[in-house]
Image (cartoon, rainbow, N blue to C red):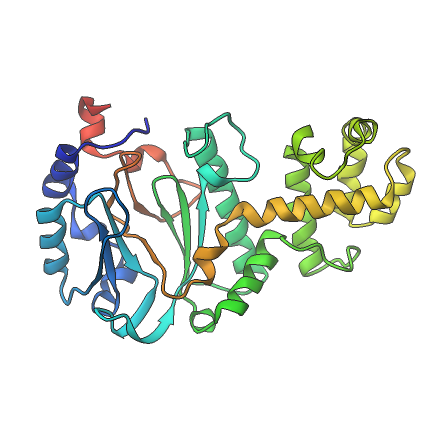
Length: 316
């Protein structure tokens, strides 16, 4: 299903299938305040600092250029064509299936399949739940990016955040730092325990042996997996003393490794960059021949909704 599009297919997509109605309102309503970037030949975003005052201008550009990739800034500017007079920026999270730290498939580096796309969807849903339930955010939007999902948040309370604050949000929602008080019932400890438990269930020996060098102890961790999982879920790490052969120091190393893996659930560089450009919803991801589309509900997302016509009509 995933393959690179040809130049002819890109031209066909933008001239025959692309429709401005597929561009989300959150882009259209702020069109003139965003910087647009394009990759015209597959070498990267080599056409930057574009500003469109009207949707017709964007449409003309896409249909005439049929770019390899199309992007729009997460930031709003008074002067987007110069990237000056920054106003505010969306809080965004990029969950890329090819970069997931614990993949449920055997994809080679840089490749994706339906299994890891589904894993990225589950990760995105979990992070979004934390954004909503723990941080009280409401204007949370989802975009299928071609190889994963973007979470795009527009609540006023977060659009003025700086890099440091955005980094703290990442650490919180992904469980990227082991909290000092694992026995707390609410807040950071609960989120970490939930993320850590899910990661531990997916760990294989190669990830554990990176921090636990004794083969005997590694074998014990996996033979007592259910007990250790229960300890992680409860947060009572001192109970590891009840698991013969696995000490407290080993448990701390294991949790540290899990936190490190959790930090890879989303690309932190994207979140902290308040001048980032992201794939334009409605555009074609040439690398995998999929449409980048707004997702109304992650629960009802269907990958076939993102398949362009040229793939449906025998182009695959």
